Figure 1 (cartoon, rainbow, N blue to C red):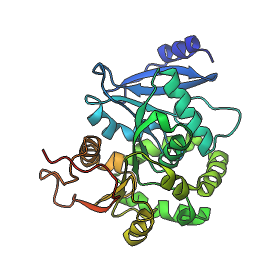
Figure 2 (figure 1 turned 90 degrees about the vertical axis):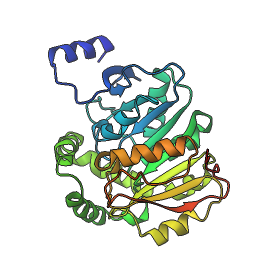
Figure 3 (figure 1 turned 30 degrees about the vertical axis):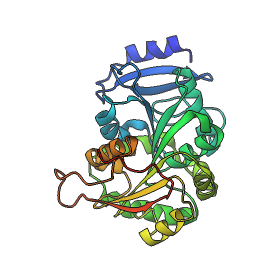
Length: 298
């Protein structure tokens, strides 16, 4: 479908905007791509793109993205095959999604950006950094998913079932339509690609400042002792923090806290809790690479 026909479709099916960000369409490699963007980006503002998780659209990332949209030129796309964007004839795997992210940024005229991902969006960002290291300024990996801890599929389903009651009930209104649209065959194929992706190897190869944010109540992740053991394999770039009271979909459930952490990280400020947060929301730094940018204290 051409950009013209995509716009015609939008005019004929008006819907109430789901975000304070501007809702837009473009066409990338012949596929209609739906995205949200800062409505009035500040000239020269740093670019930040938010990458969604498995089977979902970018809609559940909006609570955090909206809080950062005035400070950063913000993009929240639905990658091809997800959400309101069109599907490709071939099924996308993690490298394909990383290349699709790069092609979307090409289409928007973005040469360099910081990327914020949740769940499957984290391996996509790691793969993006592997192929396009000169195009990524910083990475924020929230609740990374994939790898051995989520295998086999029945184990991952069990982890997701335990996570569901830990998320806000309103998350279902966002997630269920996205999962239904994504479909069972796509879920099975992409799950195999996700669990086979070498996330740890690629993460340790990255040489950009990287913030990893984990939820204390996230059943899709191993315990903090294992995470610290993994993170300690690099002394260069990784900063790992634990958010008390959070589960997997932190971008949706704890947007104020996550936006606060991202601001501190982007400006190399010390990672501290906001005193205005509820008592159950506290941040604990569990790993800092020796060569991670030193916090500014002024």
